[in-house]
Image (tube, rainbow, N blue to C red; front, top):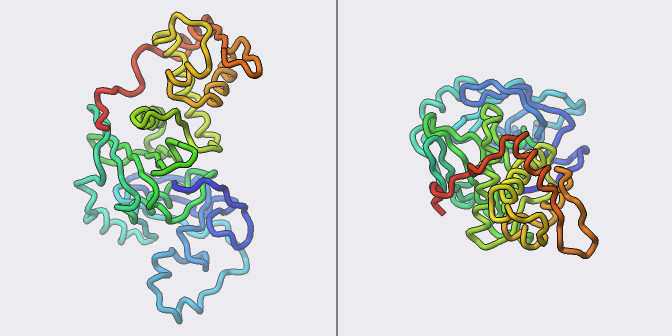
Length: 319
């Protein structure tokens, strides 16, 4: 999702509701609960889907008023295509679309990573505006710290596909020109495909993009609670691997700048991770040196089954 400033929940703000306002989602063959509410699927009357309202003539639009009494659930079920993310509230329209969807037999964008089971494709927001807008709308139902708008032109979307079922399973977005040099703006693994380590794969890929650009980088802040969990999983794995199996396996003391360069992570993210793992002996203010408890790192590797095998196989990169 291309924007990160959280909107306040107040009357007239178009984007966020205090609780889910769509009860259920039919996403391809899956029936899903929504996690968060979003007004952006709807017209200002809070009862009509936006694309339907836009197709009404001006006279009919003027007759529709915003209800005075706020309903908790605005729509019982929304049908979303799990190929192109187009949506409707009519079952028959959805079923007809599924049979005819032009993305049934193809995927958009350029392949940038391909292994036996998975493919990552880069989709340009400016080139595929409707697809990425609809993707952002769907995403807002499962992320609470991102607001939605339609300015997708300045973002690239990296979408992971299953090579067998040929379905998108998750994505991350990246600003084409980030003043803060962020390598990721938003990440979501769709609910049916979670707990398959796909989030860690995409995070790892975002850092590979930064390495190609010779950047020390990281995600846009602030991270959502789920986002922070995902990043700590990746950051701890990378740091354990470089100290136990990698270039720094003989070191217990290293400069923060050296470690940052070696792993491609920002220094504040490294410090957060080391404190989270409780393996940082000490770091004096103004001192670039850090002192690592290697025995605790080895135990962390054992407890979390961290091996020499990388998260992402570089030989499959096509960037």
